[in-house]
Length: 218
Image 1 (cartoon, rainbow, N blue to C red):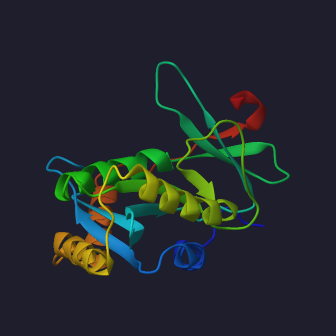
Image 2: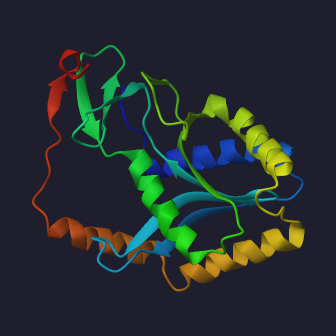
């Protein structure tokens, strides 16, 4: 039993789940996969990948898709430092530390916000699409599983239509927004992004994630 599914398989699974949940809620929507965006000068990696982007009537929704499965996901919070995230395989007592997905999604959202019009709703989620994932403790509202998706789709539709904080997008506006996102990506490609990541990795010594007993992380 593995704790992480192959990322491309998980991404495909997540996008299918997004389509199944959001298509009944919106008459016109577009889903972009692997949108590559430029990051601000000074970032360790000059590009970032957004696993999935939904453009629909109520705005733009970004999804960071994680391939975790058959595991408990929880955080260890501290007053002096950002929360640390851990996975614990079902039936095991040891945990593995992972990067904070909410922070990853948030930094990409902040950058994309600076590149899009202010009157366009922009929101991000962390989607855990694989089987056997359980969230322990208090999690950010943006962290969701496949079971949450139908509710999230209805929520963003209803909130967008009733709040009217941002203008609604008709079919033409949806297509214009998609084109704007593709223009932001420009000539950037997945190959370019992966090369940027490899170059960053080569500049750093290999990291060993600590293995700790779960009881010590409560």
